[in-house]
Image 1 (cartoon, chains in turn red, yellow):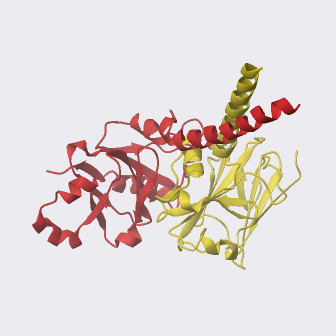
Image 2 (image 1 turned 135 degrees about the vertical axis):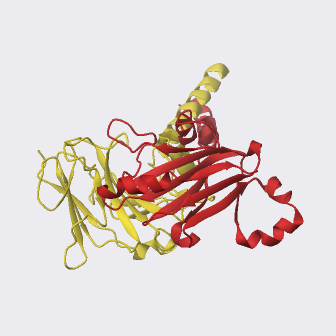
Image 3 (image 1 turned 30 degrees about the vertical axis):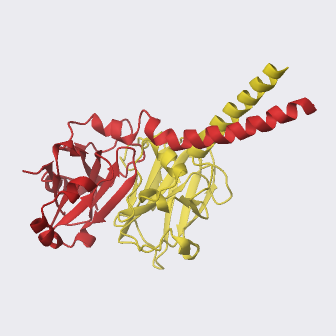
Length: 181
Length: 191
């Protein structure tokens, strides 16, 4: 029995390492992650509706059915992205995720306090390259820094009662997301 | 002999390591989570400080966590006694709810899909639900239609319920979570 003790201990240490490495690598390695699923809806730097979830079909699991959801999958290679989100009569939120699903920023209509949420999405280096005089007016605009080149912007609008869905959808149809210039 | 020892070490290592990751990414490890009665939340999951376990968990399911300014989700897959939620029972959810601008409650099957039913009802929003006079709410998840706040379960054996509180105060799900009240969950009349 004793001669198996050492390999067993070595095995458990190795197990710990395997566990840590696989856990950390999971967001990169997961084949069917949210980014891949949303990529099937349409091209990057464009707005698409995420179809309302049904029992037979949902783009993302455990979606809240009380929302109308639109997505803009982005790639900042083309430059700074300009995002315009008209808020609805009820709750509207904008959430930003990296390609690997890390939620790096979110805001809602209350926090924005405007009828239309307007913001620019850019990488840290694109922000550093902004001309000086534009920095001065920075207070007027909202700049969101993306830690990665690719990611996902999720626009979600609450449907208080099923009868409101069409109206909320019409409003969200006006969301725009496109490279600046 | 040495070959056997090395092979044993490798086998134990790979199996225990992958096994642990599999369990952890299924949400079985409570790391980074807040538990209130039957309900579990991962408050940091919607922030850049999300821990590796919750990130692995979301990557595995393909779900996106709610952004922290958006809301916080509390999931229950078992009742207050720890028995898995069974869609063939009458599942009662009753009590006070945390303060938020509004909330939704949604019922899912084991794969995170909505459950098909004739009423096309998958949950409630705080605007739709019938409140009790004392600001409590009682919702019943059951296979057959009934009066009051009823959500169909389709008789599925394993279901989960998710409460989402939107535009909630930042304390909710944070360190002060032990002051947060979540409703009781119990099951009866299983068929």
